[in-house]
Length: 130
Image 1 (tube, rainbow, N blue to C red):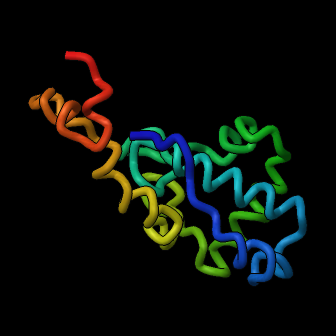
Image 2: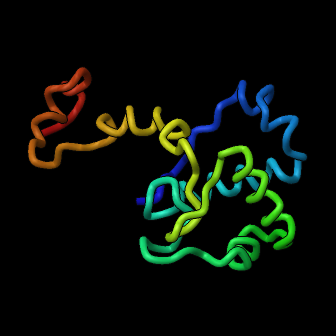
């Protein structure tokens, strides 16, 4: 299921290897690829389904960037082990590292629809009208 947000590391983004290995333009594409992986049905993959990959031309058109730039960034990401090509599309290596906080908080976002009384028993339950 697509995510509404993805986690970006502040210190690593400002002072890490991505800062000096990639140009600003390339960093922008990398962050766009992270967002596409977050928008995917398959955690950490840039793919329409679990059977095929998006063509590079489609990804470039979606991101509104030249195909040559996309391929350059993918090659750099593969060389630095940020991305790998698989049969079903591009996979963000260490995807869970980017989403660990999202996954950790997932349990708190779920609402137990089977027990409406839980709404009334909480810290501010006295404010809820039955």
